Length: 157
Image (tube, rainbow, N blue to C red; front, side):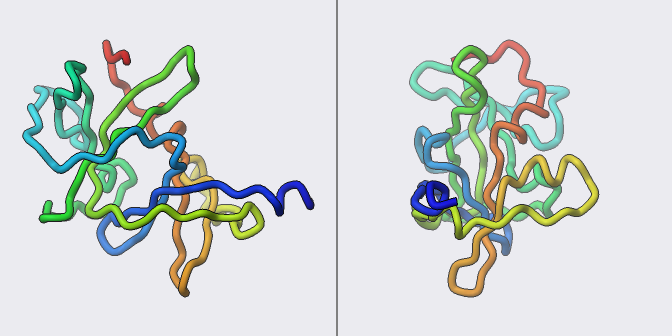
């Protein structure tokens, strides 16, 4: 337990609607302003389309819809977080639309609680933990699990 207590990780916190979530900084490549997204016919409703990022075509999803949260109107703080998910041999780079990026939080392992058990496997797979900051609960997303459940055909680094 003492090894766990001394371990800290950094997480990028962001808003989706009125809720605050976080993703491990190690999964984050870049934060972009919301730009033109090219729609892809017959794609899932949470996939908003694709963008050109340094010559690569990247799928972009609305993270609120992906997590089953109410969709919100895009505003001046809406942005795209470019994430790298999966293993080195099966890596996927994807854009996730969020309402607002907040901070980078450095959290000690003992500050992170297990996600609540809600009886739905997909819910517990998408949340890897919860921590409390200033009386607000921040849910840490398991981006590998979330994006492994989405089928992005023909998308490579």
